Each structure stands twice: as structure tokens, then as C-alpha cells.
Length: 281
Image 1 (tube, one colour):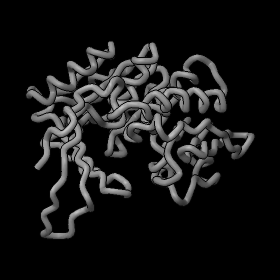
Image 2 (cartoon, helix red, strand yellow; image 1 turned 90 degrees about the vertical axis):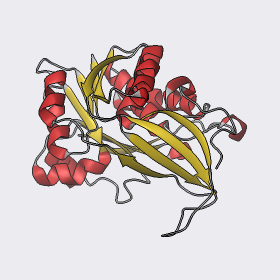
Image 3 (cartoon, helix red, strand yellow; image 1 turned 90 degrees about the horizontal axis):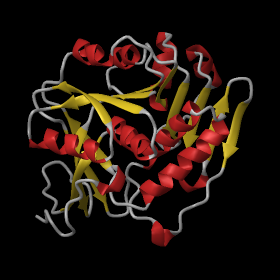
Image 4 (cartoon, rainbow, N blue to C red; image 1 turned 180 degrees about the vertical axis):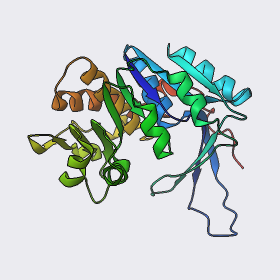
């Protein structure tokens, strides 16, 4: 069993000519509304690949929450829903020639204990925990046989003495890399830092850093990069659950990510994609 825990969002992706300055009004185009959030995306790609996976996440009793539930049902994903006042939204701005910028908001999220009650205290198998609050993220993974989380949390975990088995992140979001001292302090077994079409680096206790390569996707097959990291994580977790070594797991992650890169949207199948041209302002 693989347990994925973390917040979910209804993503609203908008293409804009540039990011607005303070007080400026910028005319853009809504490209799609779709399920989102790293936890939901990762769990959905695991379900698409046939993994035994459970997602524990939040949703409100509203139309946005109904959309998330329908999308999860569509990929056969089992979800332990934690009620909240309103389903969270994420605004994803993609400027011409620039990196995407994401704003997330969650009105009156549930209490930590409500989330932990749904996760339970049984062995959760491999656990990916993506909650924003450190103590909840740690508590939500407490019963995992392999505890995995985002590499951006590494320095904080090392300073606080939190124990993790696996960190996954991107080189662009971790420009300082991951120090062996910090990995040592958390007791980590592995750390993966992806670098897009160039592959990436993987650290394994007792072996150190190694590079891995991927086969770049042809430019004419690339539809969208949103969700590539989440789908990569799904492939890695599934491979480890099946007993693969860490380099084999990276290869599996790259294979799943290629499916994501060929579609518009971060959720398998492009669920909830707004029709082309809709939402123009």
C-alpha cells in the first residue's frame, strides 16, 4: 500500500503576457480548470499506473469538491476525504517565456487531528506527505514503512531532527542542492533532485551521489510541463514499493513523467480541461 497525504486544489491555469506589477491589470486567458495539488496529482498517477494507493486529502461540500471527487473516481483512486469549509483553489500564472507562478489559498482548513484521524495508526506502507505545516507533515507520515517528502523541507527537517527515508525535489527548487550533512541528520536513505530533460542526481546512503539520464521528449510531443514532478514521484514510489533499487525507481519515474508531458494538465487524462479559447478576459 502507498499512502499519499496532502492538500488538494482546483487549479485555474492562466496564460499571461507577463506578471503584473503592483496595481497593474493584465489581460490573460484561462487555459483550464482541473484537479491539482502535488498530493492529488501524485496519487492519481499512481492509480493510473495500477498501484495500490490511497489518498488522504481535503475537500469542501461545493461544486469544486464535486469536481475533485469525480476526477478521482475517474482514475479509480481511493480517497479518504477530510471535510473543510471550502475546496481550496490555486491560481497558476504562466507568463510568455517565463516560469509559472502559483498562488494557493485554503479557507478555514480542517484541524490537524481531523486529518490524522482519517490517516489512522495502522502501517501505511510507503507514505508521501505533502502538508505545508511541518508538524502535520511529520505526524502524517509517522506510520509509514518508508517515509517520503519534498526535498525543499530537508534543511528544516535536519535542524529539527525529523526522520525521513526519501526526499524528492527538483534542482531548480533546490538551488543549493542537498548537503550530505543534512541527509545524515535526517537518517535519509535516498535523495533525488531532478533536472528536466537532463535527468538528475540521486543520493543513496553508503554510495553517495550519482547522475541518471533520461531520454528527452521530442519538442513536437511536449504539451505541458505542469505536473511532471508529481508524476515522476509517482513512478519512483511505485517502483520502490515493488522492490526496485533507486536508479530503477528514477527510470520508472521518468517513464511516468513522459506520459504527463504529452498531455495538457497535471492530472492523468487532462481531467477538467477547459475547452480551448474558453475563459478569455
